[in-house]
Image 1 (tube, one colour):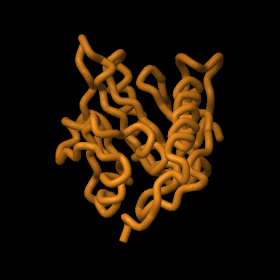
Image 2 (cartoon, rainbow, N blue to C red):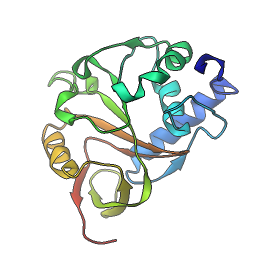
Image 3 (cartoon, rainbow, N blue to C red):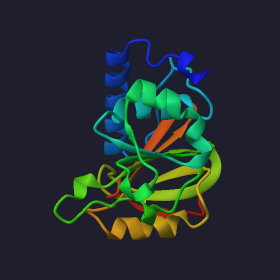
Length: 194
């Protein structure tokens, strides 16, 4: 039973260190940071995704889980106490094992762009995948990254997301104990370089 699995060994320190790591990843897009080393979350959550959920999601948050991730719902509700929502459009945070269409998530409003959703996406890894070039705030020069597990039309979906800036979706990619953040201010293009 997933409720038998603990959250952070020290909830305050675990959440603080994960929050700092997420902030660093958001301010330096493409940087890979490690979190959740002390977690043993239920399937299908990887350690970094579990750490991000436990840190960012709380009782004031509406959380959407894609159907293939619902088996972790009891554990998430027990440890993070979010309001669960059945629709992507109503979610403050969404957790997915495969990327939903970004235009289905809440992009915020012109008066409240900060209300745009954050998608926590579990991917296969940060090696042996599609190559992307990142450019924008937080990067002195473009950065090449490799991400395994994004859909083939990701650059087109991201371009549409970026055009809505300052509205839009922020993306946190998780694999094992590693995460990478892609804020909505970022420009992302497919790259042939590896």
